[in-house]
Image (cartoon, rainbow, N blue to C red):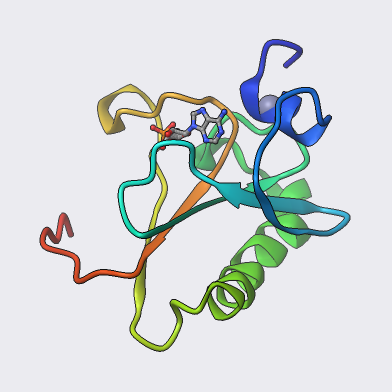
Length: 114
Ligand code: AMP
Ligand code: ZN
């Protein structure tokens, strides 16, 4: 956990453009944006990946989901729509092992992986 990039952002040890924060989550701009708006929403609690959430995290999980729309509205991407991506584990290409939701918006998505 001490080597976790996103924990360091939460601690203020690595700078980030924070767009939203509360007691449970923070959201900041992705450093290599893949869309005009690319925000990462993360829990303050260090959880490596989505599939590591457990029953103790039920309230936090709910809060994360409810915060997606709030951030999208604040960022001005809610009306046109946006994509939420969560990479989970090696085959997904997850690079940072601290749970994060990518919020991608501001352009028409050209690829529908689902
Ligand atoms: P993932 O591949 O799902 O683990 O996504 C990790 C994301 O973190 C990538 O989109 C990176 O561009 C982003 N990222 C890496 N370092 C930073 C940083 N210092 N600040 C903001 N975003 C970062
Ligand atoms: Zn972490």
